[in-house]
Length: 160
Image (cartoon, rainbow, N blue to C red):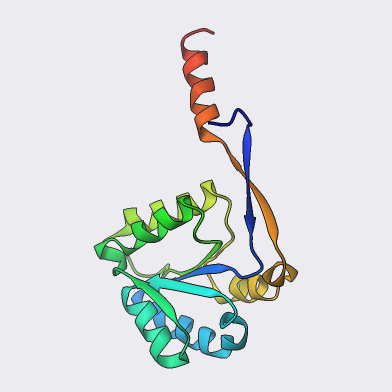
């Protein structure tokens, strides 16, 4: 375990992009991917269940599919973020429709923030991410070393 307060991660020039959309937003995401397939074809894509399948079928892009969100796909993508296997997340969630797996959605968004990856929750932000100079460059990000943070809290609690 390192004693540094932050741990650095480097995103390669080829990004690992997670694509997730609720039912009411799948069509938008599929169309966006089709419109941007010339950029997306240079990166590794993954997504939850139906979304991944629809994108692959419509665009011809290779998309690694995980389980459907309500069946654990959100957690699978979250675990890939923790492992450093996803560089950013495009998650078009439907703000007008309640989701039976809302706690999973919140957990995925939380883990994306904890691990400091860019997140687009709408197409405007997705366009900005895709148009960023960092899409074709490496990018260093720093993530809080939570092992140190937890130890500091323990020491504080113990009066050290």
